[in-house]
Image 1 (cartoon, rainbow, N blue to C red):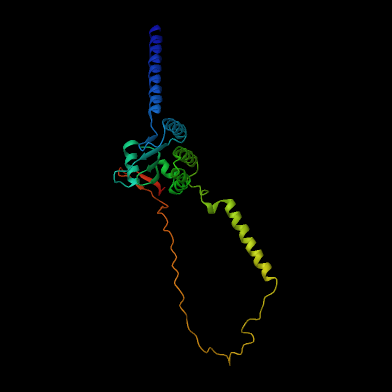
Image 2 (image 1 turned 30 degrees about the vertical axis):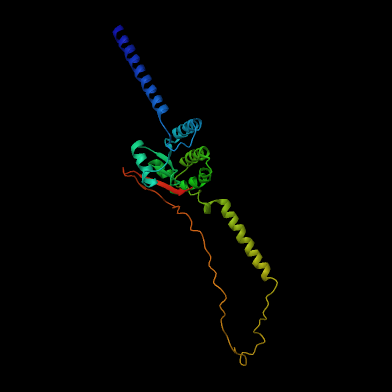
Length: 253
């Protein structure tokens, strides 16, 4: 009986040691995980630390890594391929990557695995358009923080939810309905005053009237120039060279 108790105690002690080691290893891995890869040196140490903590905290809740990647050139690669190669070599699960190339002034946001579904190209376009002005102004920490928070919020939404579409929001539809009603009322009021039925041809005798002469006089030619808009695609998704599909939104700043 005593032998059995000793064996049970020994087993519990070994199990406790193994559990403690496992928890310590997991905690160490979480602490060592990197979310900000600031190769272009856009952030201070304090800003980097703050963003690392925010990405780790919010990412754990969504089981998604929110990554920031900056570079001074992509080595001749397209920025989407550059981000894809980075994903293939560093990650394997649900990941969102904000990539900024300071050399070519390009920004690319991409979503992989689960993030591809929840952060579709439409939602990524919204995020990119929101942060582009801060990136252009050099407010990098603010832009990166907004990217993390907006991505976190979108990862909590139903991927089939179309409420991001302006045309489907209730307040936009209300404005359209009010505008249509106003136009209809205006037309009705205008027509209620009676119509003028007398025109310039009412008292004209078409049998005796005729055009004696006509000619065109050239005055000038006006040329109007319009700036060609930047190429900001609605969908910049694709597949990495490692075979992982992704959603994407690319533009300049």
